Image (cartoon, rainbow, N blue to C red; front, side, top):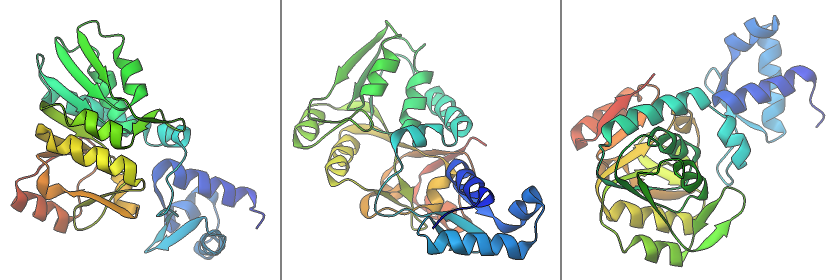
Length: 253
């Protein structure tokens, strides 16, 4: 299907913001609601988007966005999440940071922390923290995933199993309404599960667009985590579950 200029712009907005709303698009492009609904239907038929109530989201579920595209999405929100999360982490502690552009935002905010040890399977995190001379960096072995600088696989999980750290900060590709963290890669999932097991305090950092996405593999439940940093309030039912579980929710937006 050949997209028109407006449909290409709609697709770009959805990639940057996670979802689009019919009324907002109609006002933005100065066209009727019916025209926007037709655009979204055609984008859905082309396999590029999924229709949801009042709008549409980028189609996901079997493959993640390319790394460079993920890094550009919700940059300001991720930066705010990184700042808030880093404020919770004190000097003189040990941390594991896993894969993801939001955990990389946390790493940027740890560059002025003193006497910290960071264990990571994320080459980008290691490069970011090289600027902090007071940070000891330990990088996992394993299979290098060139697409995003991640190290994954059995060797990586075995490496992580050697540690017991104060904090684990992880990301996820999707977060569903039941509070399950979801991802795409089984090899990455195994490493992330090991990371959670080896930490005294477990933290998820994610922007709210992950609530509109799906992925096929279950990583964990928010019930097993100590804290969540997110840029928008959770849906009411999920927020209630987190309160019952004792999972702290820190809204940065």
